[in-house]
Image (cartoon, rainbow, N blue to C red; front, top):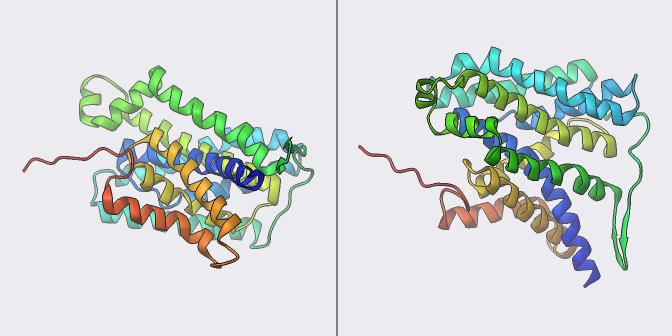
Length: 291
Protein backbone atom coordinates (compact mmCIF):
# COMPACT_ATOMS: atom_id res chain seq x y z
CA UNK A 1 0.00 0.00 0.00
CA UNK A 2 2.85 2.39 0.83
CA UNK A 3 4.37 1.77 -2.62
CA UNK A 4 1.06 2.68 -4.26
CA UNK A 5 0.78 5.87 -2.19
CA UNK A 6 4.33 6.84 -3.08
CA UNK A 7 3.59 6.38 -6.78
CA UNK A 8 0.33 8.30 -6.39
CA UNK A 9 1.88 11.35 -4.73
CA UNK A 10 4.86 11.31 -7.10
CA UNK A 11 2.39 11.22 -10.01
CA UNK A 12 0.51 14.22 -8.62
CA UNK A 13 3.81 16.12 -8.33
CA UNK A 14 4.76 15.36 -11.93
CA UNK A 15 1.21 16.07 -13.07
CA UNK A 16 1.34 19.52 -11.46
CA UNK A 17 4.32 20.36 -13.67
CA UNK A 18 2.53 19.02 -16.75
CA UNK A 19 -0.59 20.98 -15.83
CA UNK A 20 1.26 24.26 -15.37
CA UNK A 21 2.79 24.08 -18.86
CA UNK A 22 -0.46 22.85 -20.42
CA UNK A 23 -2.39 25.75 -18.90
CA UNK A 24 -0.16 28.23 -20.74
CA UNK A 25 -0.67 26.26 -23.93
CA UNK A 26 -4.47 26.28 -23.46
CA UNK A 27 -4.49 30.01 -22.71
CA UNK A 28 -2.80 30.73 -26.05
CA UNK A 29 -5.24 28.48 -27.89
CA UNK A 30 -8.28 30.06 -26.22
CA UNK A 31 -7.16 33.61 -26.94
CA UNK A 32 -5.87 33.17 -30.51
CA UNK A 33 -6.93 29.68 -31.73
CA UNK A 34 -3.23 29.08 -32.43
CA UNK A 35 -1.80 25.66 -31.57
CA UNK A 36 1.70 26.43 -30.30
CA UNK A 37 3.84 23.51 -31.44
CA UNK A 38 6.90 25.31 -30.06
CA UNK A 39 5.85 24.82 -26.43
CA UNK A 40 8.63 22.26 -25.89
CA UNK A 41 11.16 24.78 -27.14
CA UNK A 42 9.72 27.40 -24.78
CA UNK A 43 10.53 24.96 -21.98
CA UNK A 44 14.04 24.54 -23.39
CA UNK A 45 14.59 28.30 -23.58
CA UNK A 46 13.55 28.62 -19.94
CA UNK A 47 16.07 25.98 -18.96
CA UNK A 48 18.91 27.62 -20.88
CA UNK A 49 18.06 31.06 -19.50
CA UNK A 50 18.31 29.59 -16.00
CA UNK A 51 21.66 28.01 -16.88
CA UNK A 52 23.04 31.28 -18.27
CA UNK A 53 21.92 33.36 -15.29
CA UNK A 54 23.30 30.73 -12.95
CA UNK A 55 26.79 31.41 -14.30
CA UNK A 56 26.76 34.73 -12.43
CA UNK A 57 23.96 34.32 -9.86
CA UNK A 58 23.00 31.76 -7.22
CA UNK A 59 20.58 29.16 -8.56
CA UNK A 60 17.43 30.37 -6.72
CA UNK A 61 17.93 33.92 -8.03
CA UNK A 62 18.65 32.59 -11.51
CA UNK A 63 15.36 30.68 -11.49
CA UNK A 64 13.42 33.72 -10.28
CA UNK A 65 14.95 36.11 -12.85
CA UNK A 66 14.28 33.62 -15.64
CA UNK A 67 10.54 34.30 -15.38
CA UNK A 68 10.47 37.98 -16.48
CA UNK A 69 12.98 37.21 -19.23
CA UNK A 70 10.81 34.34 -20.47
CA UNK A 71 7.76 36.61 -20.30
CA UNK A 72 9.58 39.17 -22.47
CA UNK A 73 10.55 36.37 -24.86
CA UNK A 74 6.88 35.39 -25.18
CA UNK A 75 5.95 39.01 -25.93
CA UNK A 76 8.64 39.14 -28.61
CA UNK A 77 7.38 35.94 -30.25
CA UNK A 78 3.80 37.21 -30.26
CA UNK A 79 4.70 40.63 -31.62
CA UNK A 80 7.16 39.60 -34.29
CA UNK A 81 5.93 36.17 -35.31
CA UNK A 82 2.35 35.40 -34.27
CA UNK A 83 0.51 38.69 -34.75
CA UNK A 84 1.30 39.00 -38.49
CA UNK A 85 -0.14 35.49 -38.99
CA UNK A 86 -3.46 35.98 -37.18
CA UNK A 87 -6.40 35.62 -39.55
CA UNK A 88 -4.42 33.53 -42.02
CA UNK A 89 -5.24 29.97 -43.05
CA UNK A 90 -5.07 27.68 -40.01
CA UNK A 91 -2.72 25.24 -41.78
CA UNK A 92 -0.30 28.07 -42.54
CA UNK A 93 -0.29 29.11 -38.88
CA UNK A 94 0.32 25.52 -37.73
CA UNK A 95 3.22 25.10 -40.14
CA UNK A 96 4.61 28.45 -38.98
CA UNK A 97 4.63 27.35 -35.33
CA UNK A 98 6.34 24.11 -36.33
CA UNK A 99 8.91 26.22 -38.16
CA UNK A 100 9.30 28.35 -35.03
CA UNK A 101 9.95 25.19 -32.99
CA UNK A 102 12.66 24.03 -35.40
CA UNK A 103 14.22 27.49 -35.48
CA UNK A 104 14.34 27.72 -31.69
CA UNK A 105 15.77 24.20 -31.45
CA UNK A 106 18.56 25.10 -33.87
CA UNK A 107 19.18 28.49 -32.25
CA UNK A 108 19.58 26.99 -28.76
CA UNK A 109 22.05 24.41 -30.06
CA UNK A 110 24.06 27.11 -31.84
CA UNK A 111 24.09 29.30 -28.73
CA UNK A 112 24.68 26.68 -26.03
CA UNK A 113 25.74 23.55 -27.91
CA UNK A 114 24.08 20.11 -27.99
CA UNK A 115 25.71 18.81 -24.79
CA UNK A 116 23.94 18.43 -21.50
CA UNK A 117 24.52 21.43 -19.22
CA UNK A 118 24.59 21.20 -15.45
CA UNK A 119 23.96 24.16 -13.21
CA UNK A 120 26.28 25.47 -10.51
CA UNK A 121 24.89 24.56 -7.13
CA UNK A 122 21.65 22.74 -6.51
CA UNK A 123 18.25 23.40 -5.07
CA UNK A 124 18.10 22.47 -1.40
CA UNK A 125 17.42 18.78 -1.03
CA UNK A 126 13.90 18.37 0.31
CA UNK A 127 12.57 14.91 0.98
CA UNK A 128 9.15 14.14 2.38
CA UNK A 129 8.96 11.19 4.75
CA UNK A 130 5.60 10.21 6.23
CA UNK A 131 5.99 6.77 7.71
CA UNK A 132 6.96 4.50 4.84
CA UNK A 133 6.08 7.16 2.26
CA UNK A 134 9.26 8.83 0.97
CA UNK A 135 9.22 11.41 -1.84
CA UNK A 136 12.37 12.54 -3.67
CA UNK A 137 13.42 16.17 -3.85
CA UNK A 138 12.15 16.64 -7.42
CA UNK A 139 8.62 15.65 -6.45
CA UNK A 140 8.65 17.84 -3.35
CA UNK A 141 9.78 20.90 -5.32
CA UNK A 142 7.11 20.26 -7.93
CA UNK A 143 4.47 20.13 -5.22
CA UNK A 144 5.81 23.30 -3.59
CA UNK A 145 6.17 25.37 -6.78
CA UNK A 146 4.12 24.02 -9.68
CA UNK A 147 0.94 23.00 -7.86
CA UNK A 148 0.36 26.31 -6.00
CA UNK A 149 1.18 28.26 -9.18
CA UNK A 150 -1.35 26.22 -11.18
CA UNK A 151 -4.07 26.69 -8.56
CA UNK A 152 -3.32 30.42 -8.32
CA UNK A 153 -3.62 30.77 -12.10
CA UNK A 154 -7.02 29.06 -12.14
CA UNK A 155 -8.21 31.37 -9.34
CA UNK A 156 -6.82 34.48 -11.08
CA UNK A 157 -8.56 33.63 -14.35
CA UNK A 158 -11.89 33.29 -12.56
CA UNK A 159 -11.65 36.19 -10.11
CA UNK A 160 -9.18 38.85 -11.27
CA UNK A 161 -9.88 41.68 -13.70
CA UNK A 162 -7.28 40.44 -16.17
CA UNK A 163 -8.74 36.96 -15.97
CA UNK A 164 -12.13 38.34 -17.00
CA UNK A 165 -10.51 40.26 -19.87
CA UNK A 166 -8.69 37.13 -21.08
CA UNK A 167 -11.95 35.17 -21.05
CA UNK A 168 -13.71 37.99 -22.91
CA UNK A 169 -11.07 38.02 -25.66
CA UNK A 170 -11.17 34.23 -25.85
CA UNK A 171 -14.95 34.31 -26.28
CA UNK A 172 -14.91 36.85 -29.12
CA UNK A 173 -12.07 39.21 -30.01
CA UNK A 174 -14.38 41.32 -32.19
CA UNK A 175 -16.90 41.76 -29.37
CA UNK A 176 -14.06 42.51 -26.95
CA UNK A 177 -12.77 45.27 -29.23
CA UNK A 178 -16.29 46.67 -29.51
CA UNK A 179 -16.39 46.86 -25.70
CA UNK A 180 -13.10 48.83 -25.78
CA UNK A 181 -11.10 45.93 -24.37
CA UNK A 182 -7.45 46.15 -25.58
CA UNK A 183 -7.52 42.71 -27.22
CA UNK A 184 -4.03 42.91 -28.84
CA UNK A 185 -2.51 43.76 -25.46
CA UNK A 186 -4.37 40.88 -23.78
CA UNK A 187 -3.20 38.44 -26.48
CA UNK A 188 0.40 39.60 -25.99
CA UNK A 189 -0.03 39.14 -22.23
CA UNK A 190 -1.27 35.58 -22.79
CA UNK A 191 1.76 34.69 -24.92
CA UNK A 192 4.11 36.17 -22.35
CA UNK A 193 2.37 34.25 -19.58
CA UNK A 194 2.55 31.02 -21.59
CA UNK A 195 6.30 31.44 -22.05
CA UNK A 196 6.75 32.22 -18.34
CA UNK A 197 4.76 29.13 -17.30
CA UNK A 198 6.88 26.97 -19.59
CA UNK A 199 9.98 28.60 -18.09
CA UNK A 200 8.86 27.54 -14.61
CA UNK A 201 9.05 23.94 -15.80
CA UNK A 202 12.33 24.52 -17.62
CA UNK A 203 13.93 26.27 -14.65
CA UNK A 204 12.77 23.58 -12.21
CA UNK A 205 13.98 20.72 -14.41
CA UNK A 206 17.26 22.50 -15.12
CA UNK A 207 17.86 23.01 -11.41
CA UNK A 208 17.19 19.36 -10.63
CA UNK A 209 18.57 17.39 -13.58
CA UNK A 210 20.42 19.77 -15.90
CA UNK A 211 19.36 21.26 -19.22
CA UNK A 212 19.63 19.95 -22.77
CA UNK A 213 17.55 18.94 -25.79
CA UNK A 214 15.92 16.21 -23.68
CA UNK A 215 13.68 18.90 -22.17
CA UNK A 216 11.79 19.12 -25.46
CA UNK A 217 10.43 15.61 -24.84
CA UNK A 218 9.09 16.82 -21.50
CA UNK A 219 7.41 19.72 -23.29
CA UNK A 220 5.67 17.34 -25.68
CA UNK A 221 3.66 15.99 -22.73
CA UNK A 222 1.71 19.24 -22.90
CA UNK A 223 -0.21 17.99 -25.94
CA UNK A 224 -1.90 14.91 -24.41
CA UNK A 225 -2.66 16.89 -21.23
CA UNK A 226 -4.23 19.81 -23.11
CA UNK A 227 -6.22 17.55 -25.45
CA UNK A 228 -7.41 15.33 -22.60
CA UNK A 229 -8.59 18.26 -20.48
CA UNK A 230 -10.12 20.11 -23.42
CA UNK A 231 -8.28 22.63 -25.53
CA UNK A 232 -10.42 25.50 -24.22
CA UNK A 233 -10.45 24.57 -20.53
CA UNK A 234 -7.70 25.86 -18.23
CA UNK A 235 -9.18 24.06 -15.22
CA UNK A 236 -9.44 20.93 -17.35
CA UNK A 237 -5.72 21.16 -18.10
CA UNK A 238 -5.02 21.17 -14.35
CA UNK A 239 -7.09 18.06 -13.68
CA UNK A 240 -5.85 16.31 -16.84
CA UNK A 241 -2.26 17.00 -15.82
CA UNK A 242 -2.88 15.24 -12.51
CA UNK A 243 -4.53 12.30 -14.28
CA UNK A 244 -1.68 11.92 -16.78
CA UNK A 245 0.97 12.27 -14.09
CA UNK A 246 -0.63 9.62 -11.88
CA UNK A 247 -1.22 7.23 -14.80
CA UNK A 248 2.38 7.65 -15.91
CA UNK A 249 3.70 7.04 -12.39
CA UNK A 250 1.57 3.93 -11.85
CA UNK A 251 2.58 2.55 -15.26
CA UNK A 252 6.25 3.06 -14.40
CA UNK A 253 5.85 1.34 -11.05
CA UNK A 254 3.69 -1.63 -12.03
CA UNK A 255 3.84 -2.20 -15.79
CA UNK A 256 7.19 -0.97 -17.13
CA UNK A 257 9.03 -4.17 -16.18
CA UNK A 258 6.38 -6.28 -17.90
CA UNK A 259 5.76 -4.07 -20.96
CA UNK A 260 8.82 -1.92 -21.72
CA UNK A 261 7.87 1.49 -23.11
CA UNK A 262 4.35 1.48 -21.66
CA UNK A 263 5.11 4.48 -19.46
CA UNK A 264 5.67 6.79 -22.45
CA UNK A 265 2.67 5.36 -24.30
CA UNK A 266 0.18 5.53 -21.42
CA UNK A 267 -0.76 9.26 -21.71
CA UNK A 268 -1.45 8.92 -25.42
CA UNK A 269 -3.47 5.74 -24.93
CA UNK A 270 -5.61 7.52 -22.35
CA UNK A 271 -6.17 10.43 -24.72
CA UNK A 272 -7.15 8.06 -27.54
CA UNK A 273 -9.70 6.24 -25.39
CA UNK A 274 -11.21 9.45 -24.03
CA UNK A 275 -11.46 11.10 -27.44
CA UNK A 276 -13.37 8.11 -28.80
CA UNK A 277 -16.13 8.92 -26.28
CA UNK A 278 -15.64 12.70 -25.89
CA UNK A 279 -14.04 14.31 -28.98
CA UNK A 280 -13.75 17.66 -27.16
CA UNK A 281 -11.89 16.24 -24.16
CA UNK A 282 -13.06 15.71 -20.62
CA UNK A 283 -13.92 19.35 -19.94
CA UNK A 284 -13.95 20.91 -23.40
CA UNK A 285 -17.04 22.66 -24.72
CA UNK A 286 -18.77 21.33 -27.80
CA UNK A 287 -18.76 23.95 -30.54
CA UNK A 288 -21.99 24.19 -32.51
CA UNK A 289 -21.66 25.83 -35.90
CA UNK A 290 -24.72 27.12 -37.70
CA UNK A 291 -24.66 26.91 -41.46
